[in-house]
Each structure stands twice: as C-alpha cells, then as structure tokens.
Image 1 (cartoon, rainbow, N blue to C red):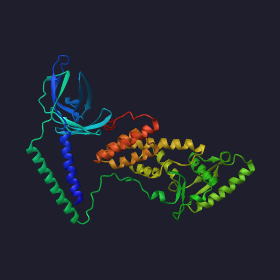
Image 2 (image 1 turned 180 degrees about the vertical axis):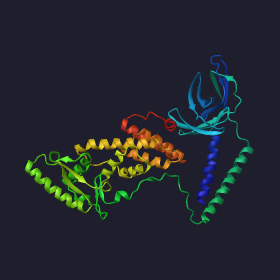
Image 3 (image 1 turned 90 degrees about the vertical axis):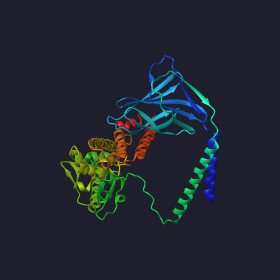
Length: 442
C-alpha cells in the first residue's frame, strides 16, 4: 500500500511540474527574402528546452534513395545527407544517428512514396523535446527564420478533470495488475535476447590427451590428467623447440645447444641434451604414441596430428582455402587463444606472428564468403575467433554487427560497436573514424 501511495503522489507531482514547466507555444514565421530560392518542403521539427527555442530541423526526401536532414538557423543551414537502401517499400522505418550540440542523438524516420516523416526521436541530453510541426509548408521559400514565443495557455478545468480521470484509471489498473501478480505462482521470466557463443566449437577436443600450444602450453595424458606441471622449464622449452621445428624438417643439435645450453661446453651440452631427451620420452609415454629421433642430424618429434594441435593447424593451413568442416576444426583449435600465450622467448616471436597472420587470412577469407542470411551463427563464431588474434579488426567488426542485426539483436550490434570504439580510443589515443551507419552499410 505504501508503494501505491508513493506512486500516486509521484504521478501527481509529475503532472504539476509538467504544467509549471510547460514549454511556450512556438510559432514558426517564415520570411522570403529572395536570397535563397530553394523551396522548403518536407516536415519541420522544433527542438526546444523548457521555454527556449534551440533550433529547427527540416526532413525531406530529395530523390530515389536519398533524403536530407537540414539544420535551420538564423541565416544559416547545415545539411546532412541520409542514404537510403536501393529497395525501400512505402512505409519503411529506418534509424539514423546524428550529433547535436555534442550530444549523441538518433531518430526513426518513416519513408512514404513521396515524402518522409519523423516518427520517434531519442536524445541523451535532458529536457530536450522534439516537436514535429504540422504540414502545409509546401512551396515556401526561406533564408531567415523568425522564432516568436507566445505565453502558454493555462489548462482549462475540463482538461484538468480529464487528466485526473486518466490518472485514476492508471492507478486502478496498477492495483488490479499488482493483486493478480501477487496471486500468481512463480512465473518464468521471459528470456532476454542473447547470442550464445561457441556454436561450432567442440570443447571436448581440447580436453583429450595430447600436446596443446594454442592458448598456452598444456599437456594432457591418456587418463585426461593435466601433467603440464611435471615439465621443468628446460623440458618444456625443449619440447616446444621440437614441436615447432618438426614441420620445417627438425632442429639441429647446435640450435638446441645455442638456445638451451649456450653457456656449456660441447660435452656438457651433449650430456644435458641426452638426459633431457630421456626425461621427455618418459613423460610423453603416458600421453600417446610419440617418437623423438634424429633425422639426418636434425631432431624431430613424430606424432599423429590428433596428438599435437600445432601439427593439425599446419595441415589445415597447407590445405589452402578452408572448407566449412575445416573451418569448424580451426575454430576449435584456436578457441583457447593465440599460439604459445604467455611464452615470451625471442625465438618464438616470429613463429607466433606467422601463425597469427595465417589464421587471420584464412578465417577472414572464409567469413567474407558466407551468406549472412543463412549462416549468421557460423559467421559470429568466425568473427569471435578473429577478434582473439586482432581485437581491432574492422572487417570482423562489420560482419559481427551485421550478423547480430540479422538475428534481430540490434541492441547487441550497437553495443559491440561501442565497445570497439572504446578499445580503439584506448589503443590509438584517438576516436574511431567511422560511424555505426558506415559499418552497417559497408
């Protein structure tokens, strides 16, 4: 009951304040001076704040697929062209975004056969009202706008009585709904519109036994136990040297010595290498079928591609243009993150850069070939994977925003663009140079 009383008092107070702060009635007087012979057509719109006239907009359709939003001020005008889709049925609604006095604003415009009209306007700045003016401005010519304010007429008693009845009906409806909701049992709330991630990623694969380099070094044995901690720093780097160089024909004993035991003499380096290889073979024995051997003076680690994610990645890249099944396997491989994340030895930097370039090239090429109407979910997964390696990839941004809109989630689409803007500003120290409308129409 207390809540009902508070609500009723708030409504009454809001009504009184609306009367007290009612904007003055605006009368638009258009004077023809002969300086501007452009006919003033379309729909006029006043932007007011309390009793102060801010400016006037003119919305007009300038031709097939084209419209213009004009800011009219005393002896000046600013025109912002609005680009319409090639095919636009009568009665269509489009949303446009613009800036007004450093305030982000947007409006929804309904386009007819021969004209276009404001339908809804949203402003972030408080106390601003958009007041569409009636038609009848056809054929006027203008270069000066004379804005005259008249005192608002006091509301007559019948109007006050009507408002009171509406408030009473509102209160009664609220009471009925409140009582009915209290009598109901648990009602399952409506699920929000969300885009569920990882639709085409197999999480089971990255938990099977094997050696994993994407997302950081991990080793899983045949009993699905993570034995990464059993590898000392030397054993870990020796294993990574073997894995990363095997697709290139192996690594020489001299390269191993230079990387791991550069401060040892030849005999000591050979002993350390022999002991480390023995320990490495024992650890890998519980993981799967691995063989470490020297092939014409170069050391290699032989294993099935299913046991080493980097080997499988190399096979996919060698295949050239990825098929859908190969792309889904690539998404699973890179789901954990970049190659050797957290491993910062200098010899691995070039390898990591080459792998990143290969992934971005393959996935971007595949994404651009997808049909957004039929494959929006797959496109979202591909864009997420690209973002793991290049968070400021504009191609992935545009495709992801479009895919979200295709699934009916315009709010998420705009939020993705806003997050991208913030990260771009943080990284480059300057605003992102493109607008949301540019990204969507690209």
